[in-house]
Length: 117
Length: 112
Image (cartoon, rainbow over all chains, first blue to last red; front, top):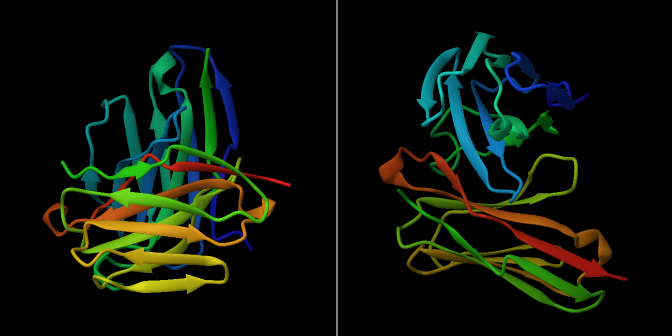
């Protein structure tokens, strides 16, 4: 049983298109995240939701819109895709903040590789 | 903005050799985590360290947290090809609400 699953695993699309990536976790965690990993493998947080409420919104273009219909799901919709959006997008989840050693232990999905042509 | 620097960026060694990866910051961590990421997969947690001077062992992996909680190291003894991967440190800083910040990663290649 996959703990954090995201779909699709691969996505190839043209510039200007709109696409979505879906994420679901069955760990019972309250907090979910989207991270972007660039070609140099640098992992940067984009958004964080705690029990369906947005709590972290890093400097991300407003073409990116996360949606959390319930605490087990966090989807990412991207409008007007640009070449620079090509990356691997990781969904992650963690228990409620503060439960463990003052920081969240993250469980990651396998990633969604987005290629914009 | 808290920055984590990892070194080296890339390490290639022969099976059986030892290696050490470093993670440094100018700020004090409230806690620090090490993750390993294999190609096509997400990072997987290896360990969390919280107390300055703490040492944790996971089979052939030894993790140290600096006394001042500004640095950490990961030492692998007698590396195996299965240790190949991207090693990421991630620090939580109290000033940033304990949000995790990731280092740039160290790519380790262990050749048979």
